[in-house]
Length: 552
Image (cartoon, rainbow, N blue to C red):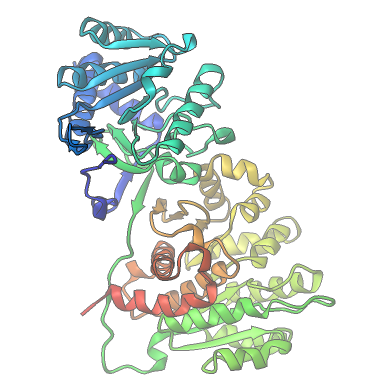
């Protein structure tokens, strides 16, 4: 029979409450405080290894390869868990040596693949302990391990810990490639458990260089949950994350971010209301630049989603070429000529929230429209959502109209201003490259917030939101949402949510909008599959999520 996990797969997310996230530097500080209090570092390594071994003993079941009896029927027999522990030279490798020691004592058939020789005092002590216990050791460089890695139930990855800041090289890169290759060939019989973090993943940024990292089934996270486990490349490598806390984390460190699994509850609507009770949102975009087909669909998607949130009134200022399509798709939306500046300014004054930029275009005329409408919205003290081409023009105005940018920054200190860039748009706003943004997403979104104030979303795997000096990581969402129009859906959701002053202030936030959007996307993905998710299907799912989150 194939390898069986006894972990409850229906509870992969574990506790749905927000989870505190820390940087590697913070984890080191937590450990230092523990040691400064008189605790011994090797004792912490022993405790970590014992808990890992105990978790393995409780949750990983050996593969049975039944022999046939004289009648040709499978003979049932008990088999020991077969384990290979891959160790590096540092303390993560020391954890691996001790895990091998404990599992060996508990009856597992254990071998250690020594990719790097122990280079710290604690790792050397751990290695000696395992050798004294009779654990079989194979130096990786000598290649003698190969016969002992077949028909194994479990690989334990203890090559690198949270100190890694570069791409694995030489024997380490080869070992990681072999681990992943063996997993691909024996996916139904081989489980991979990483100690603290999959080797090759950067604990602070979630980055993986050149695809060189262990693809774990489980990551047993020691001391505190690392930020890098939940963003960027790491999301494809960590598998199910299990916390092994070990020591207190709250004594001297404030979390760098909070991992959110779900949106906050919404309050039930009162009966004695009318459409004016639920706000008026204005969506500005959907332009048709000379020689182009135009981008009217962006504002239509935004409008459909805004209504799905329950906004009372909605006006769309778009190119007249799209008015008939707008009315046909969203008949309860009011329409306005994007280029009629007098009329648009009048609507800005009448609306609670202005969402601008979706399909606006990037030519000089679009820039002038954005500049004029943004200036008027700031002067009128309006809440703002700036997305897509609006972010492109904002970066241009940072050089061309410093006074307006300064006014916007001051405005953001008193009113809600939400920005929703992807890494390319963020890079332009920071005068850098998208690759630099992706190399450290937390640093990038923090820089944007310091530069422009307001609330910021940096879209991507493990979307980051920073608001009121607090950072959040979105644990919902799926790869199917990487499709055209999803950003327009989010902007409409955000506008509809923000316009409704009857909602609790805590639920009229950018992180709430991001969570609701991601949860709707997950519901859609479960129905249609990741390949078939489309933005046009999202408004209905957004409405369903709002219903689901409403407290009766």
